[in-house]
Length: 344
Image (cartoon, rainbow, N blue to C red):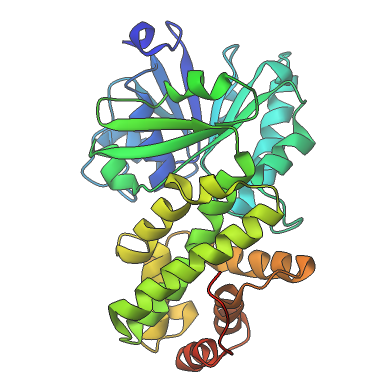
């Protein structure tokens, strides 16, 4: 199977991060790799015994060629194929530790292929994951991001899914797309790392906004307006940072935006719904009890837009609700009360 997929025989993929998305991508990659090793921190023995991740993806069995471990050093082997799927606030620490372990094993980090499914910004620097990797790994390291409109459970169970893989090296994205391609998973490729990463980050903020609106009972008209104007904000900032308009009009832009803003599988949307319904952000986050990337991303996105002088009113109002205590209904009234302007 590995040879037919374009992945070398006996190749192993090492996945760092055993949350829902990391586990789903590990399961997906098992179709093309001889072995996939999944690194987690908690309940490793329970996962190995049950052969499933009962906390994040209960009821979805592990393929026979998927193993789990909490021993980070065991991931470092000559193949050096890595997929990092940790929260954005842990990304820099994770890739720095990985680089050190590769050196300690007497291997060259320049020979590594390092992909990630992390979505968001580094909280210390405001950088996207690619900039973090470039600070740590040599330029020769093949690096890339996998993203798109997808929920972990649907991906892991083999429901039809389309994703985009953006890569730093010309021609490498097409080859790496075969790592995750299956009969039900379509992988497109791109060289727009900035655009793909920004789409993945910004859509979480817009999902909180549409969730708040729906929690307030404002209906489908308001939701459609927020999604559309949210895309405008995504493009405005994205182009300023070097992304391409066509990327934001594709899977990792409007595709992921629509998915995350309209389906309650989205933790960010559910978080917004709870706030709109009158509950405190802390209470809603505690009930969800999983990473909600849009919370930190809202702060970093607001800072980045302000530093560049880019108008992002939806982002600004989500920030005021989450970090300045603005009432959700007041935020919506403030947005609607803005002066009329040309749509484009």
